[in-house]
Image 1 (cartoon, rainbow, N blue to C red):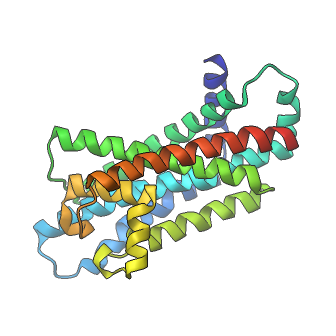
Image 2: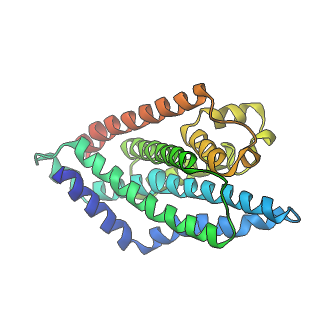
Length: 256
């Protein structure tokens, strides 16, 4: 536990010191949140408020993907270049505990950014139509996006060398998921192959479930809460995270 807390604190401090990283992690989804509603045009105000609510949740997911898939592998690559793993290899430190510490730091930065996005969304007129039960379920699906994104980030860190390459690989995967996974375009307008991708990808699926619960089916265009899709999201998220941890512990610690 001491190892996990120490790594979490170290990673958080390093993230907050990197002002450029903090700015882009939080500024890009905030920019989309403020600009995209312009396209709503003459949509009735009561509908716009719920559309803004759905957009707010999607931007939280976008931020989570950025933190997990881009910032996390970039940070790991930087530490590798500094020789940190060579030092830790000779110490009684478990790679799994160290990796969990990094994952918790990513979770913390995602929570901070998520709160910022939610507050900004409410100030911009976003609203949700849900009860306590729906809100709790949405929090659970939001946790899936954090775990899946961190798992992808650990996989990137294990196989992509160099801070710039790891960071930009994560950015590319984030944008691909956003534009092809039913977040940038309504699900009904996607071709069949991309609809399947949106349902199968754990982050896209969890985001759809979260928005469906809090903003309604109008924003998503389908019901993502079927038993098959929900179980698939949980299983694939768990698998990605386990593969990420195994890859990280084997390749990052042995080669660096």
